[in-house]
Image (cartoon, helix red, strand yellow):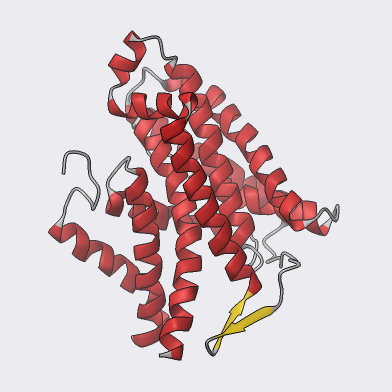
Length: 286
């Protein structure tokens, strides 16, 4: 039972990271209807920004996370203006190719600037909290708390604020939103900024546990897309539930089946769910 509870906590912490990353991806898809293949690269850049703020400039860890979110929000907005906005009337394949170009550019740039070395991000939360016979690292508790707060905050932002409601309006009916005066251009840029900021926070939270390196976003990219499909394309609740579901499947699969096939077990879980519900768990209209 102790092992089960230990892995449950680990899975919830990992699910928080997956959920934050997938939320940004699903928001962009909901507004622009394009898969942002550069999302994993933005996640990686967010980790490096936080790492530099901590290791080089010595800023406090919470400030480093906030700084990473702000910087990546600006990067996301800039990418939307420079890459995706000019392609707004082009076939979706053009935007997908543009996203792949951004992914390659950011990954190669990180390798040029930092090399291929693995880097350990310092954290003030390096202790262990013990309760009910469990030993849980403080960093995992921080991840769980921060991810839950951010997910709740995003939900309230989408439901209770005018900017958030404009995002939902465009997701539901783009033409109708334009007819009532909502600026699709402005909302698209805001959505990209929020998406990149969420990816940055997710990376900065998990980086002290996982190492920082230029290709760290590649596997996250695949998993985030899997989560978005699992939860239902464009569904915010689906991204959250899908993130936790995939993380728990991976964690328990690696513990009780084989540590060598944790990722594989997670994707097998995805296949099984989609075999039952091909549109995803929270697809619109289901």
